Length: 248
Image (cartoon, rainbow, N blue to C red; front, side, top):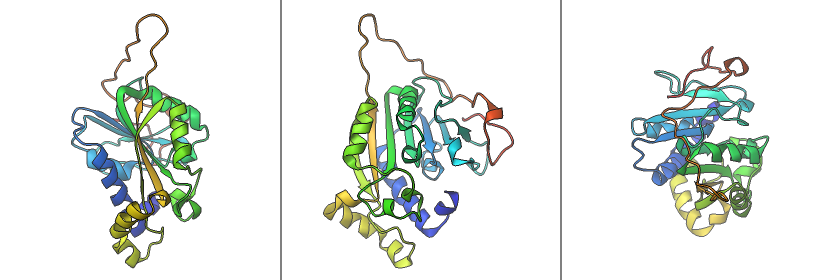
């Protein structure tokens, strides 16, 4: 994953997706933002704005590269079946390279729902089943389970999320040719207008759906002041450091 994003193709992908994500999320001062999956290429734009920022990497990925490269590490390896975060503690949750490769998708979504604040928002970037990127395994988007727009919407609604916006990105072919990369912006503009259904990925933003309890008063969700540490360091592995660090 890290090697892909170091290539010219990966850098183009990072730039385009980061631009789309940042366009959706502005004015996050004082908020807690957490990335789940492989999100470090997209979190840097929020440093210095949010109060708490962290990257959670599922242990199924086999390792966790140090991020950022300077200063205390804000990336930890976690069990995605039980995220080490308090209920309702996250204002913005970003998932990239996580949903399509999860072993237990519905359980992961329940965990994401649990940690998201009542007024929080989540953005997921997943491979588009109808796009070319999901058909070629030369990039990370060619692995795991791709989704159609309808499949993704139904899955999220079933997990008590309300889709707010869903658009495509990566309309240019997944090849690292220089001429292709130089014209990638034009591909995005033309593809979004002429063939929006065939994007390489889907970017969906959702809100947390809250159900009123039957009888009694609604329970208040306790907001964490900071991100929790991984509770069992002996059961986790991190490539960059010999011990787990607190996500700050």
